[in-house]
Length: 125
Ligand SMILES: [Zn+2]
Image 1 (cartoon, protein in one colour):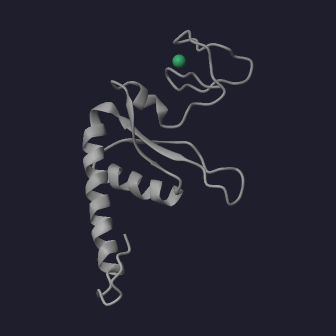
Image 2: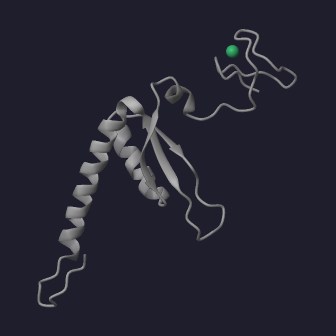
């Protein structure tokens, strides 16, 4: 059992933190504590690809933004779950800019890869 306030660990049999006088919880929610202290949260990215979510998360963290990952892969094989990246509201705007920049860059790279000479007369878009 853990105290949600001070993160102290208690043995079974304790129901309240003796320091904080709050009910103990079975487990501390990972990474959620700090985000809760902010002005709010904003979902800045939603994807069904966990690898994509991790890439964006790393990108944001490299820019000093704390990221909460919410949602999970679907328990059923072959069925994609939905993953959300949640940041502090104060950092949401910056996060959006970083993600947009990254997506523009990715699209430009994609264009370079898939651009065909126009002999086929077809656009792939
Ligand atoms: Zn406590």
